[in-house]
Image (cartoon, rainbow, N blue to C red; front, side, top):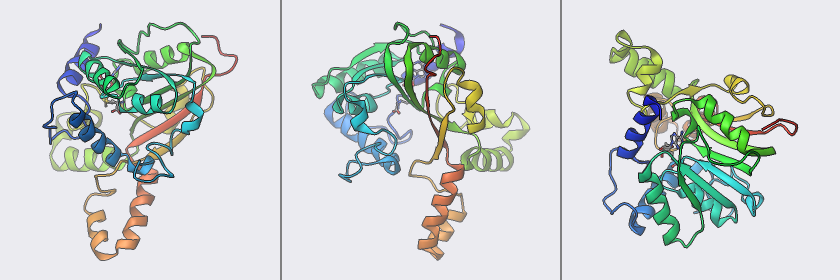
Length: 286
Ligand SMILES: C[S@@+](CC[C@H](N)C(=O)[O-])C[C@H]1O[C@@H](n2cnc3c(N)ncnc32)[C@H](O)[C@@H]1O
């Protein structure tokens, strides 16, 4: 394994994805209480994409049309604590999930055992997948490929293992976002003086998760996704942070109705998540 990927293993082994970097979960990792708390955090952060509290909109149903995954062979890259693989399994997918770290794989396996779910769970690097060409109908990856040592190599592997016409859905961090330019550039870069010592990408890395975290624009997707169809991109924002620092809290006090529309308008354009869907070209060689 190359040194940047070793740094990734070390980082994610020490900081598994529990959706709150400050308030560590008290329950023992792998216990039912642990998964309940970790899921509560994840589903609250991702409420705008569908939430179990709304029967018409199950979790992530604005991104994943759940009836379509039934009986499909789905590969997830980067399972973390296993929530998304578990949801795919509950929807009837034949799901295989992988992660770089043993910590994620062991914890996710405990979740699947607790829920009596059959999920093929492997510790492996997405940049070197141990699967045959053209073996999956869909690949799902949420918040992972921008952290890998070589994102382009990871995308080539996903292309190889997807069947022709197969769907690749993923989320990466969005560069043209309030978080990157205003919080990273203005707040950390200029006001905290970090831009005197490093470039803007490095400034953003100082307060972003992972040993590596790249940011992408929708315009960069076609070059990254060689052999895939024209990518369909959506800009998303999780809950829990203001759309605009200073302005959003002020507007909430002065004009609550207008502030909701303003936040939505900002988040739809400059949110921090870039969600991409694309298909492997039907006549593309593995
Ligand atoms: C931000 S967490 C996301 C976890 C999960 N997808 C979620 O949304 O909760 C990133 C995960 O990706 C894993 N990861 C990073 N690079 C990877 C790679 N090349 N292959 C497999 N897993 C990787 C990390 O170990 C970590 O568990």
